[in-house]
Length: 146
Length: 407
Image (tube, chains in turn green, brown):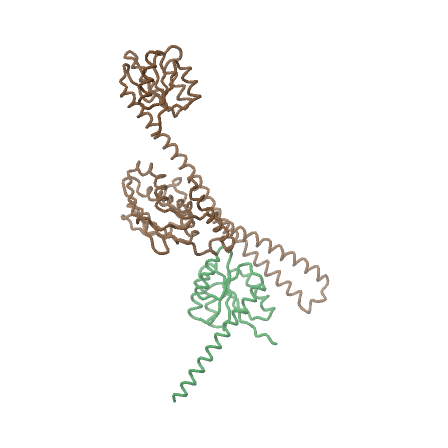
């Protein structure tokens, strides 16, 4: 079976971390976009189709939570996985209340990360599928009315 | 009141014996001594509260005896008996530490009165001493908590800073392992050695990760002991601890406590610590002449405890910062800048909140809101919910003992 790549955006101010993790994700067949700040992440989301954003909470300037709110506001279908240090688990949980799919403790195990990425992607696919069906139904009803 | 134990010291039998009998009739326990040496010997053997001492005796003079007593037994009070000719030595005796003197011939009522006064002084000093000890103990505990809190902030910062490079090491290692797994590198020279070394790096990252996580969870876990909290009782106890200060500064305490609020299941020691912090702040804010209002309000699932003062209030620009660590408007040495930071930490650990309401010129009001039953089990112990439930159930079993535990 051919794997359909997940379009991932990595957002972290630690460039080395982003670089290494994106190499790893691409190695297993995902398509990765990198951003080094919340602003950059939002700008890129305007230009590119993204399935899942992996978002660091503690970043200078616009932090992960503020970025998450903006993402969910403008691109509600994009799934977000929060990356957090042990000390900020509370904000990660807050993030989930704001619509994040899940969170990961840093440093995270790669297998755990890819598993969560997969589930997030699945949720997005299913949601899109439901929307498609609902739209089709709507179209059908409208043509029935005619 | 407890029986007063007297020691009557006079070299004249004819004076001492009848007086002793009459004092005994008034309900005192009376011991007798004929001179200074006998008196000091008796003090070493028996419990004595007040010594009634003749100034003029052969051998050791009354003044010397007073000095000796005060040196060895500072809590015993001495009443001197002087003759008309020796009033001066009575004054000298007071300078040496005697409670007061009476001039012979003495009236029995007068003496009994003096003895009662001396006894009152003893009780007062004992209470003050106890309060001072208690205050010292609490202050030490508070210093320790505050130190731990600042250490915690530091440790959390360090752990976070280490986690970031660890994440990079971890991903870089993982990436190298992925590369080695590529087909093109299957036949690479000494490939196994590389894999082995990378495995060691990965293992070490895991180890370092465990340490940083442990450090952070240690910081967050506090040794809490939960029991039924009698909030009005706890408030009275805390107020007692500050009574000396509030009286001295002429600060009135007003209580607005709803009659018998339902019991609270929480950590009394921590609540008291938070309350002491808020009350101390209120006292310091007022300075002198003012009012502190303590209010307790009960709802179905929460208890709110409000401490309000009519001090100068907190400027708007400081309101947002007062809970920050090391933020202080007090002069150096007076405040650590950790009081409110610790208070909020404590209350949040108990699942509650601390809020402030203040306007310049209108005083400040701090409100602690506590859940009657702790709900956020996971957050409280950082994940070890089962551990926590075990702890709670064991506390439930011996909650009787816990309640009786003296504070």
